[in-house]
Every structure is written in C-alpha cells, then in structure tokens.
Image 1 (cartoon, protein in one colour):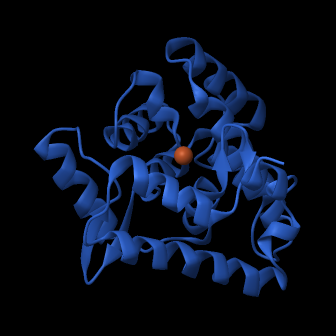
Image 2 (cartoon, rainbow, N blue to C red; image 1 turned 30 degrees about the horizontal axis):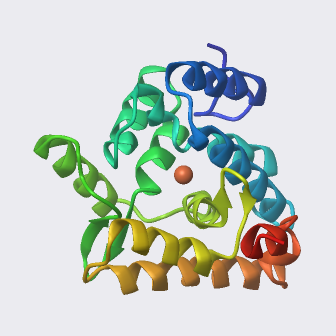
Length: 208
Ligand SMILES: [Fe+2]
C-alpha cells in the first residue's frame, strides 16, 4: 500500500478500506466506536495548533484495528500493532499499543483483562515503559473514553459502565485520574470544554 504524505499511516481512503475489511472479518460495535473516536479526535485536533486533524482521524479509525482478528480482550492491542507493523504503519502500531495502557508509579498498567501470551504482555509493558505518550496518543485515549458505538458520551458514564461490567481493582482510580488529566490537557489547549465540540453528548449520555 502507498503512504500518504504523512509517514507511518495509510491515507484516509486506505484507512477506511482497512476498517471495512476488518469489519467483514469481525463485525461488531467496535467499528462504529472507532468511527466516533476518529471524529472526536479530528474535532479536537482542529482546535489545536500542533495537531493534524486528518492524522488524528486516521489514528482514531485504526486504534482498534487488532479487533480484525476476532473477539478478544486486551490482546487486540498487540494484534493491531502486529498488523500495522506488517503493513508499514508505524504510527498506527504505536496507537494500537498506547491506548491499552498507562504508566503509573513507574510501571505500566494494561487497562483490562490480559488475554494474550506472557511474551506479548512483556512486549507491551516494555514498549510502553520506554515511551512517553505523544499528543496523538493522549488524544486517542481520551476519545476512546468519549465514544460509544452510538455516539459521544460523558466520560464519567463510560468509566462507570466499564467498572460495572469489568469490576474494579487498585488501578481503577489511577486510570480515571489519568483520563481526566488527558481531558484537562486538551481543554487547556483548546480553551474550552471538549464537550462543546462533540455533537449529541447530552442525548447519548441521558438517552434523551
Ligand atoms: Fe477503542
């Protein structure tokens, strides 16, 4: 596949084709979720000086591309990384891993149940330990928490929903804090609430 002028990612058109192909392999709500992550990332990036909205959109579209391999838990991060590396999309590969973990007290916490191999787990934690989140990593992580398959919602609703379904552990509050730090980071950049940029948050959050 060709590179677009941006290194390390497919063109927008190619990214759409890649997502459609993945949907055929493993249909599910994750595809619409990915489209909202992309849209949210673009809308926020448009309001910043240093982020490219189209690049943000492409990374959002493909952050969960590992789900093409089937219905799995957190191993979708490694599956996505491997898929992206095979195709020469280094930046996509990075996002596939960065959105499944965060650093806390000098260790890497993977957010959710690990269902890959031990070797893959070591690979992810070492990779994330050795790298700091870029603004794109932060943006995609943030939008991941803002986007359901049905649209944008209040982050608090999504966090509670995840806790109710998956349970909580000692990393739950640090994870919530890191999400709110990301939110604040972008709100300081854009000078307003992120919710002012995202359509239908009220309707989706309160089922109005
Ligand atoms: Fe996601």
